[in-house]
Length: 195
Image (cartoon, rainbow, N blue to C red; front, side, top):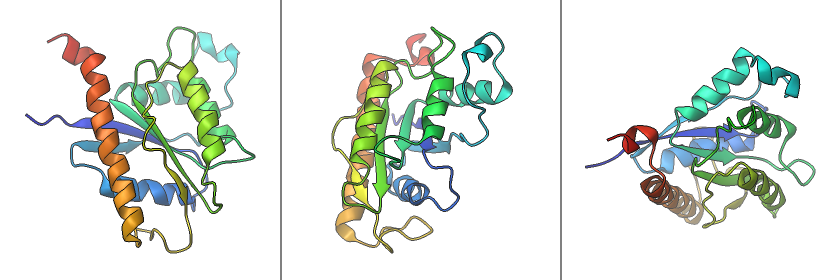
């Protein structure tokens, strides 16, 4: 029996022409058919403030609901000033609050990112991994994926034009699928645990 997993994904950039959005299209295209994807948007979230904890705004509730509806989370993020973008950190702060209502708790996750530079978001990914560790999100640690997105490597439809990169990204998504299965075997979803 084949199990389908719902993957919520974050694109860390707010730009409409983000190369990480382009990368997300390629990842979805190359993923195993058992993975279904829905983007979790972050652009309309207000800045997180502890004062909201007693009365969460609709944008914060919608974010938490989308994460709750996901079996796993994929982060596709750029690197800004050697860290993750402020918009992505803001979304994580919203999702991890109020205290004891952390949406990332036991939620399998993977991190990948693209940059025009040679280090391909390596420092931002380490920054994000530290945050996710605190949020108690089991993380796929291998393969690591620091993508230098050169012009023409991925077209607007998400097709990868270099065979070795296409195979690497396909393998990354296959490994993510296996990681999700392993984590959810040990930490089953509530509906699976009730059976």
